Image (cartoon, rainbow, N blue to C red):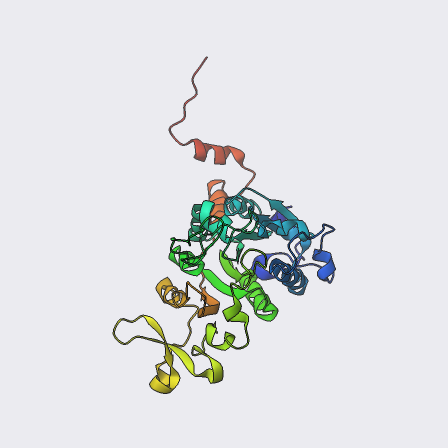
Length: 360
């Protein structure tokens, strides 16, 4: 069913996706498949939050499409009672681009991991974000290869000892937020698997966004990389480790709100300071709607690439720009004089002037 086939009375909600007529609950988005993740895996928390969020948002199951690549996180479509596809390693964004372009009535979700998205799938990821395709990408980042049993990944810290790096990783890790912002993604955020309230708020904001929404989710792997995010979860360290970002508010954090973020007067780079030393007026007031992505990029660089003793959490960037699939559909309508069924006009445009019919 295309958007034009939907009844005129069908209410539309997040990013124009048709809403359910009857109230839904979590069970409506729970499939009959056995969930096969390791006990204690952070994927369970993300799945639970997603299944609870969808009915709250009123999104119709038949208008939901989840596409994944390869990896532990990519089992996600099996466990949600909606349409879905467990696709090819690293290629989920490419497949999702086709789905989103062909079906504007769908809410399309891409579920991927740090290995799937940032290694073999790196080019597909950055070009989908560059194009601003209308879907939401959930990147589960556990900083390890889990499905293949514990090799280092593109986000593993320098010195990480794994089965494939017995003397420690030599690779400088990707910062997924910086990568997404470098591709000028229009919505970029980070959250944590164990903070359900924050995770749900980020899912809601991303679903409301028209265009590419990129969410990095810190997700613990209890088997091969347990405790990778302890600094952000331990009560004794979390206050000083998490830099919460709220649009329109000064960036303040730490025990007793003693720390803040300001721009260095000389270099202009963001830095963490003691508020008592500089005063509240010197702090940066977060602007998630800043058009220049370099602002959000600068904030992303506050992430400690090692033990994650510091990490910005929240929406870094949220700006409006025409979505690729909307523009593509408009081109088709223009080419066919507003009648999508006019195949002859479309074929003539595609053939152009460089096609000949040779008589037999």
